[in-house]
Image (tube, rainbow, N blue to C red; front, side, top):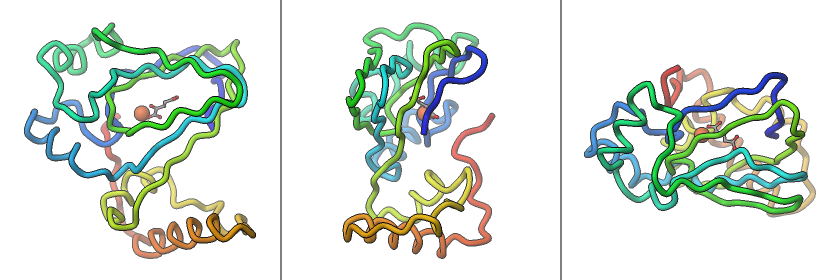
Length: 174
Ligand SMILES: O=C(O)CCC(=O)C(=O)O
Ligand SMILES: [Fe+2]
């Protein structure tokens, strides 16, 4: 769940699983692996926090984007950036390696469901992407009756079991 913070702040431009210092070659290699699956933001009330640069999940940064994302201007304007404006019930699906940032206003209520669907075939790479901040401690309490949800649940359990006790390391620094 994404909610508004107690104080205003904003995130710098980033890709969720490619470090800003990566060379163009490294960046393209990483972008080939769909390890983040398909991420979504499903807004329950109005949400205008996320900013993306369309189509950048398919290409390396150009010189200007590289300059902005690796200098003091990490929150600067990037040509072609798009503010994702969601109304209640709107859902946006995206690749979490698209170049993106976000701004958060403490006074504007945000309640947005946030998750991702991925394929077990990318399990090893996906494990770090989705388990780096904690290994879904809530999963035992999630007891769905729906067979599709049961299947999603059991695949996530396999991923957790395979990575139990491993230091998955964070995708990004800082
Ligand atoms: O708040 C959002 O919509 C995006 C958050 C984000 O980019 C992140 O946590 O990596
Ligand atoms: Fe992100």
